[in-house]
Length: 161
Figure 1 (cartoon, rainbow, N blue to C red):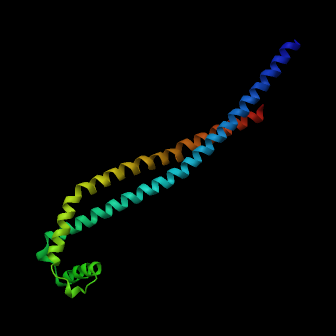
Figure 2 (figure 1 turned 180 degrees about the vertical axis):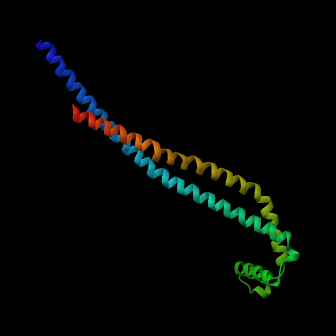
Figure 3 (figure 1 turned 45 degrees about the vertical axis):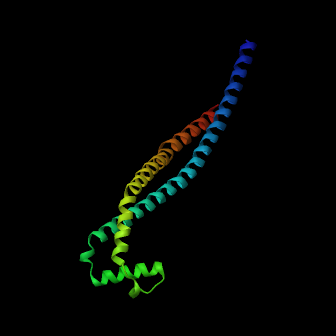
């Protein structure tokens, strides 16, 4: 009878140490998930910026192509805006900008040749953003709450013991 009481006491001590170990591991898991959450937020934000840059390149390329296709329909005020834009980059007066139509045609030609690469950048940036930001959402909506729930259950169990 004393032997069974001793065994019962030893078993209970082993339960508590297992429980303490489980609580320690659950706390470490939760901490790790929160650290991952911070990293994923930074990476997700970075991928969103990459996508925005790629979309900006596409917008400029689309504009250059559209402008070159409509050279005959450009108004005097639009022509002046184009001259000012070219002048700002070249450092000369807008009135001295000659060959602005050929500049636009050259930009459109470059844009057309770059369009495939730009679309690929957008595709990759979108896939990367969706993957990383999706992992962030899973981390926030599923992994962290589950880890927190597990830790609370273990703490409640330890208080009952």
